[in-house]
Image (cartoon, rainbow, N blue to C red; front, top):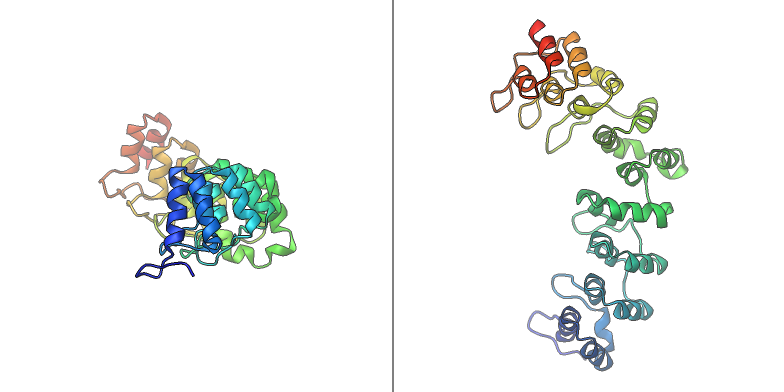
Length: 289
């Protein structure tokens, strides 16, 4: 029976983790010899020996724990694969995937291993998954790293039933942010809803496309959104297009009666931004209105 403290947390598990962090691998294995069941334990914060071994690159311990069959896919917890990918420990990630680690497991915040990488901008980790385990990925993951054809292939598969209804808005967001023309065209043809609004920034797809996307994006989106909608900093699509020197989009929005009078929360108008961007064509178009 492993001695436990007043929080019912194994002292042995804590000691294992401390030795992994310090690099005293001999002491780690000495505790395992006395308390072999401790390798399967967790602290009150959900930290397990395998996560720590991966994080500190204790490769011999990682191999040992995998051979012992420790839990790889705990529900509602931070999985070892999440640790390996978010820390770019790709050799450990390969071992975990080989032993059955899953990408669809979510932590208590509802995040998967790949979504954590995406939110952290860890494209290297996502590219690793594309190269090593593409069968485990979905269209969002492929889109995030610019793999348009693989995203479309997923959307055309049986696994994508109901996928656009759930994730179409985020896919379109990626298309606008990364200028994924082929995927955008496919999503529009497939009936993806173009009225998506980002819950935090309040950007519509028109806001996102106005900056640097081709005019075709804006033309497809405009009928589905409010032309003069403001985001969380008070900017309209026209203001964003002017700030980013997207003269073609500025002209198109003006032709469709975009307001030149609206200002953002800094009291700056589209014309103000065009002057700051030193864009004569945008300035000329805005002054005509």
